[in-house]
Every structure is written in structure tokens, then in C-alpha cells.
Amino acid sequence: MNSQSELRKLTYLTFRNIKLYFKDKMTFLVSLITPIILLILFILFLKSTYEDSILSIVESFNLDQNLIDAFTGGWLFSSVLATSCITVAFCSGMMVIDKINKANVDFLVSPVKKSTLQISYVLANLFSTLIIAFSLLVIGMIYLACVGFYITFVDFLLIVFSIVITSLFGTILANIIWTFTRTQGVVSGVCTLVSALYGFICGAYIPINTMGEGVQGFVSLLPGTYATILFRQGFLNGVLDEMGKTLPAEMTTGIADGFDVNMSFFGYDVSTLGLILVISISTIVLLGIFLLINNLKKRQKI
Amino acid sequence: MNHIIEIKNLKKYFGDTRAVDNISFSVEEGDLFAFLGLNGAGKSTTINILVGVLKRDSGECFVNNLSVDDISKILPSIGIVFQSSVLDKNLSVYDNLRYRAMLYGMDKKEFEKNLKYFVDKLDLQPILKKQLDKLSGGQKRKVDIVRALLHKPKILILDEPTTGLDPKTRKLVWDMINEFRKNTNLTVLLTTHYMEEASIADDVVIIDGGKIVAQGSPLTLKNKFASDYIKAYKYDKKVLEILDKANIPYKKDKKHLEIKFKNTDDAKNFLVKNNTLFKDIEILKGSMDDVFLAVTGKDLKENV
Image 1 (cartoon, each protein chain N blue to C red):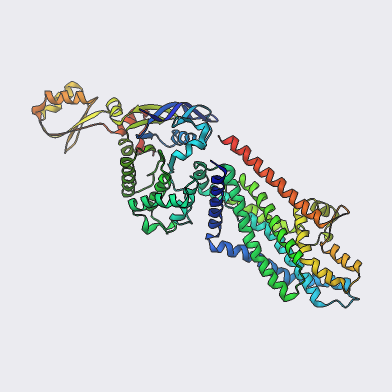
Image 2: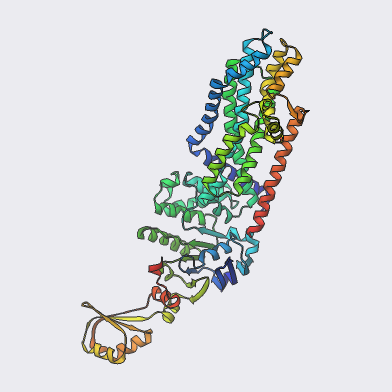
């Protein structure tokens, strides 16, 4: 088999996996509606708390309410998007469904490399997650346009990069777990666990600063946290710059620190490039682990 | 004769269970080969080793003179129909076949050409755009077989293809397979526990507890292991006295008398000697059920 033929097989398998995932329209709608509900709940129950926090910091300054709305809106939406890229990645995989339906056996007896099949699951999983994440981004942009829009083109590119890298990170992590999973029960359990936990342990649902010191240390060891901070920067850099026109620099830095727009690793500030490197290297390491596991499993088979 | 499949001293143990225990057999090109046994006898394990899904403990397996260690070269020449469909229930028949065809390196043009042959032959047009889970059992099996044959394999492996199907659908499946065998030199390796399916094979291997207990053509096996019967509907009562005297086993009811003989010669000789005593008879060859019972001591009908 030449590489061109294997690439074509990869393309078709990826299309097949994506088509199967979106065949059930309800799957797409539920995947999209869940983060929207989360956003609505955030706006209803948390927005005013965060607004009050900012107002308590800037009370002596006449800060435009529109900027406060844009900041809290951007913060909440970045939380939803950072979490969704992971949770959707975990809940949109086809690998275990194929194992349950025995379609994997059909592929095992077809002349397709196991690595091609495994990569097709990752790619399809990634594309499905990206489709939902970018649909969410459109909704988020509309929401921010209503409450206050300060995102620059560079920040937008940072958001796009954050979506892609976080989705890829989540997809590979999920597929490593799915490699050892054969039942829908385990999939549902893992999805529930990830949906419930991830937002907290990656600093998406509550600012890291409000956590205990030990938890802060633990959270700063997780690559997901760095992805969350990237989202924060993409959504909030512009509005912080705008606030800087009214507020002193120390105050905007204080807000940025307090609301996780800046990242600190055991007291050391991490730059945007540092954040990008941590999440990118973590993703590459995960990819290496995924390929290694599948290679070892393949050797066991024949 | 060309051995398209050759298995030598194959062993596969799962812990203490000897799933396949030192079996050897070969399949001739173009033959319909039946692999007969109860559930858990070792049929599917052997098939799974043959197609690279399972690793063997020892022994050799060759397909088309290639060792199964080189499975990637073997798989393009094999088509498999599993006991239950492994196609995507939520996709259309067309999409299912297209995505599977591409795994064999077919381009769209080649796929369409091959598909057209089956669409015309099997009247698939009305179901081509239908979702797989909207099809009847028979239609699904049709699609499974087309999926297995679409890349024009040399060997078709049928792993209990008619289990759970009604008699009408079973007939449809066999009509299809026989049609393709007629037109191509397709070798069919069938695993089954249906005797009537095994009895039409060119060669049969009976496997029990992972070991081969009998091997040969259905006729050879019947001659070797099954009894022959004379069924008499109109006969002279003297026959019963002769049978009792000669200690020949028989069963008698209101309608007929059934006399059991070790082989065809014994039955023929008995008839020649006593032909005036019979007016309406039929001679029955022992069935594959009898063969199975004789070689395994198990009744297939009771165990399936």
C-alpha cells in the first residue's frame, strides 16, 4: 500500500466517522445546547457576582458599565468555550461506538493500517469538536457584540488557536482513554466526570486566585489551565486595554491577575508564548503516548 | 489441486481452554468448504486467526501461499460475512458500501462499476439510499454479502451467515452465494451448525472441543459414519421375523417400517435377498446429523 492510498483511506474513514456522529441531528443540538445552557446559567447566577468584584476594585473610578459588561461577558464565555472544547471532545468520539457495534472488527479484517484507523478517529473527533466549538464561538461573538465587543484581530487569532489546540488536546486525551474502553457505560461515566470536574480543575468556573494554595499549585500543573488562560487573554486583552485608558496600570494588572488573564506558575509569571508552548508541547507528548499505545497494542494482536 | 487455504498444526489456548488444539486442514481453490461444529467448538477462533484478528499460539496458516504473519497482503483477497451485520446502521446502504470499498483502494469510478454489477444482479436500487437499520433481515444480509464481495475477493468467509434468519431469507442468501460461485472461481469457507448447509459443501471438517473429529466430502462422511435406512410402506409381515432373526434394528409404526443398516451394501444385499417381500419402499442415506452424532456423540439439533 502506498502512502497516497493510505491517505485516501484516512480521508474516507474520517468522513465516515464525522458523518456518523452528525447523522443524529439531536447529537449536534445537544452538544451545542449544553454549553449554551451553561452560559445562560453563568449569566443568570455568576455575572452579578463578578461585576460586584470589579466594581469593588474600581469604585473610585468612573468606569463605563459597558466595559464591565464586556469584561464579565468575555470572562464567562471564555470559561464556557475552554470547558466545551474538552467536554465535547470527550463526548463526540466514535472509537468506542465502533467497538460496541463491532465495526472495528470489520476494519481489522480490511486492508487498512491500524494506525490509519486510529488517526481517523482522532481527526473525526477533532473536526466534530471544532464544528461545535466554532458554532459556539459565533454565538459568543453575537453575545459579546450585544454586551460590549473589544476583541482585536490578533486576539481573535489567539482565540482560534486556543480552540484548535484545546480541542486537539482534549481529543487525543479522550482517544487514549477510549483505546482501553469497550463499553458505553464507561464512556458515559468518563463524560460525566469530565463535564463535572474539568471546569473546576482547569480554572474555568472559578478564578484560580480564589482557590486554596495547594489547589492553586495542583491546577497550575495541569496543561488545561494554560489553555484556559489563553482563552481568557483572547477574550479579555482588548477590554483590559480599553479599561487601561480610565484605570491606572496597577489596577488593570490587578484585575488581570485576579481574573486569571495572567498566569503564574509558583510565583513566576508565564508569558503568552509560554502558555502556547506548554499546551502545544503537552499535546505533542499526548500524541506520542497515543501512537505508542496503539503501536504496542498492534504488536500484541498479530 | 491448488490449496488456497492451508492450516498446519494450529493451536490456540485461552488459559486452560484449548480453543483450537493442533488442527490441520486445507481448502481447495473454488470449493465450498464447511467448518462444522457446536458453539465454542473452535470455528470462529480458527477464522479469527486466519484473518489476523487473533494471534495463534503455534502452527502455520497460509492463504494463497502467504503466511498470515503477512496479513496485510492477505486481506485484500478475503471477504467476510459475519454472523451479525457489522455495517453502520445509521448510514445508507450506498454510504456503507462506498466507505468500505475505499478501504480496498478503490476509486469512485471502480466502486461505481463494481456496485452496478451487484445492483443489477441483486436488485439493490430500491434500497440503495435507505438507511441500513430501516432494512429487513434479508435485505441487510444481502448488503453484508455485497460488502464482502465488492472488492472481488478470491475467498469468501461466511461465519454462520444464516444464524437467526428465517428459512426464506436463508434460501435467498444461499441462492446469492451459489449464483456467484457459478460465475466465478470463488472459494467459500463456511462455518455453520446447520447440517443442510454443510451437506452441500465439497468438503467438510467437523470440529469438536478444538480438535478435528472428522474430515471429508459429505458423501464420504455419510458412508463412513452414518447408517442407511430402508423405509417400507407396504411389506409382507414375514420381514419382521427375518429382521428379528438376523438381529437387524428396526422401528415400526402404523404407517411404515424403518430398517437401519450399517452401510449401503448391507441395505442393498438385504433388498436383493428379500425383494419379493417389499412392495413400496424408499432407501434413505444417513444424514449429516447422523454423521455429527456418530463422531461427536452430541446431537447438533439439541445443542444449537
